[in-house]
Length: 200
Image (cartoon, rainbow, N blue to C red; front, side):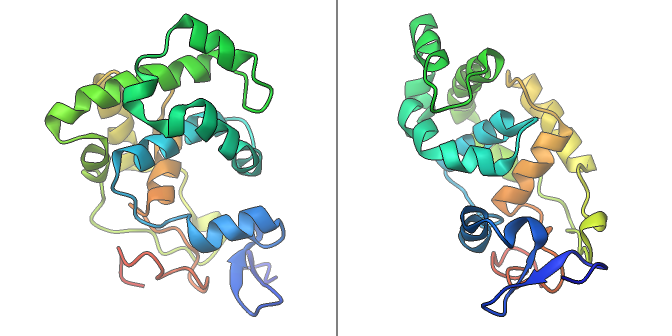
């Protein structure tokens, strides 16, 4: 690893950030999913929901629980989750396979209803992608990666105005990174140009 950048060159000769260099699950996520464009309602809603569940926890914890999350939240289909009632919330609170946090669970239901309401105005994916900035960061080191932006602040405000809860500018910036709306792959990472949304 070069201390100046935070990149680690693996046994396969590929450079990745330290967080994705050792844990096989995180490495696979980084190499195949993180930062790749998603334009479907379910895909964006799932990532928005999991970013909220991740708050205060490690992303590795969320990834390990993701299959269970997908099972109990009906594949993150907003139309199904929007119909969840108190009995469903109690069922989820009793499921040890997921993060049993009442506020985060109820937020997912609330946000599913807000997502359904957005369909009349183009849908969640179009709404979120509407906050794509004119430029993207070009970080050479981990320390240069922002944790929020003017656009992520505006997105958080706009979603709250549409009835979404348990979101903020930092969580929304993480969402924008995960969806490829901004590219915070380090310069030198083998994934820097993978998404094709931004010039390398």
